[in-house]
Length: 224
Image 1 (tube, helix red, strand yellow):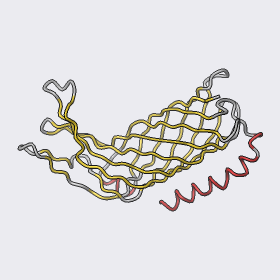
Image 2 (spheres, one colour):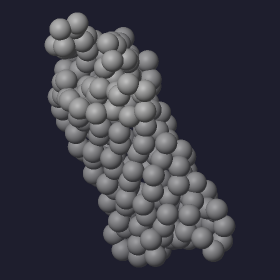
Image 3 (tube, one colour):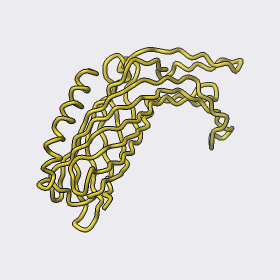
Image 4 (tube, helix red, strand yellow):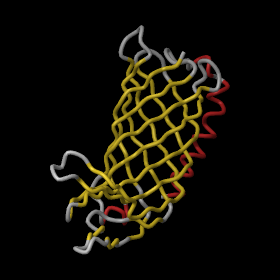
């Protein structure tokens, strides 16, 4: 799968060269300098990662810088934080999460109220399990600690659709999907942080590629 995502990234890089040379025919209506935005994201685990994880959800933030006014080719910076599990045992709240960060090319085509885009990024994935201690009423938590963490390299390839919310606004709905392909990493499955009656914590780890198929929905704001 890493080879497939890497090949997709290579195809995107090859495709953007002629597209960049002919960008005058593919000008964006809004956001000639680039765009930024935030999305709700939901990820479906793939491969061995799916044996212990059901679903991941969280937020995705991005920014793109166009390589010239109206040029469909840009540089995309993207980061996401997705929680794939949580539990409460012995007055200990544990959250299991994966964070990603990547950078790579993006090409946006079309004009008018609907545009399409495709992108590929290179970066890393950070997997963690951290706990906090709630107060007596459960109103807030304190004394957080990282029970386990690991990181690995990652590739992403995906695309989506931008729907402009009016002729005079640079705001668009952003609907898209991507595949996150990560290298092997250790991770903690939900329920595998086990607090003990004496206050100690026992952590059981698993190993897999934390791959995800991610869909996102949010807003993109063009920069003029």
